[in-house]
Length: 182
Image 1 (tube, rainbow, N blue to C red):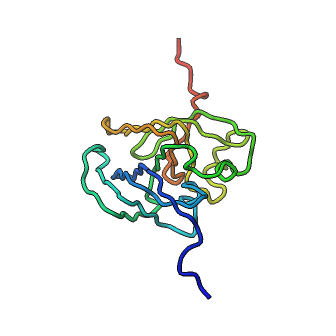
Image 2: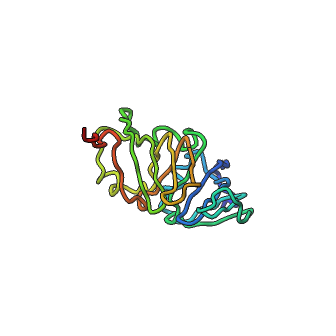
Image 3: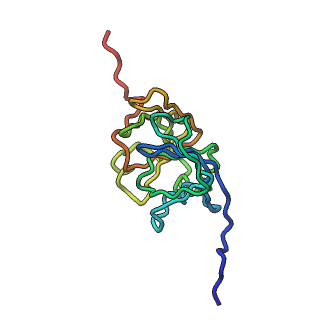
């Protein structure tokens, strides 16, 4: 006997997705494990955006097209903005089971974007481990502000921003910013 339908419960979450050339605003379908688990699921390399509205990244507010369903490869997604921290998923999953979390204000850059926000990690900051260990491709940044490097019209604020670690050019801790010479 086989089941024709999945036993999981799905729900839609509003999402603001950036690729290197487009901004897509729509809804992503997730299970009770949230957006972080869906994006970091290594058994699926693509994702679907329902009721997706597309804009070119250099004109982020000008609608180019609107589709009932847009399919994209996760590896090409640079960021996914979510409206609520709860949309990430259950806290043990988001924080990897750790209870002692340290917040680090960071600046992250990609080829097209500059991001400032708060990175939460267990214990001390270890850039190499964050970028290379495990299967978690998307890193949550909280209270994030994202701006276009060469595109002054592009500015997005998000409660939670998931950043594709494979798209990151550099990451700097704001607490390590050099003091200006007197």
